[in-house]
Length: 184
Ligand SMILES: [Zn+2]
Image (cartoon, rainbow, N blue to C red; front, side):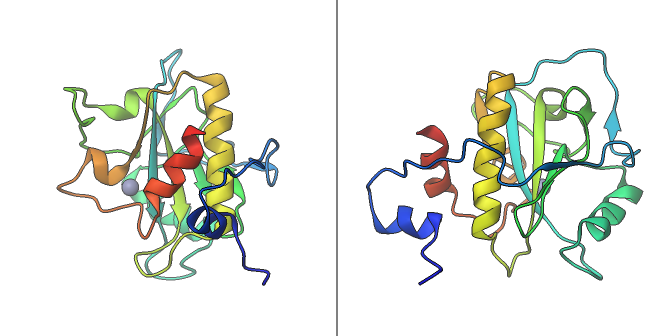
């Protein structure tokens, strides 16, 4: 029964999950030196939004980080972080810089648009037919909690929340359960 996972425990029980990760599940892999697209260097910005996405490389090596980044490059888009299938966290754009990940978008219940300016984008590598792994859920939870230590985050949203006409990601993501963990 190796696969009694974090998520399964949450689904099976209302008992609190008391072992939230305090340390990075894996070291964060800094790729910022080699990612030279999809962002704008700015002197200063305020960050209060986290946007969660899904992505994969459509044509080949679908879940490999290099293939995913190569797919972003011609479109000049990039998130701040990518979470690989084993839960590895890649930093692709420094948080202090603007990354182009949200596109045309509006924060629900507000008139705020241009959400890239004040957000951090996180891409989970999965597809519309392959859900995120438990390691990815754990790493995302860790990463969001880590970001919250550095920035006063007021909104954690899905790409589909801010661009509902265009976007359906994150795919196969158990959002409500996950957000309960974030809010603990
Ligand atoms: Zn997206």
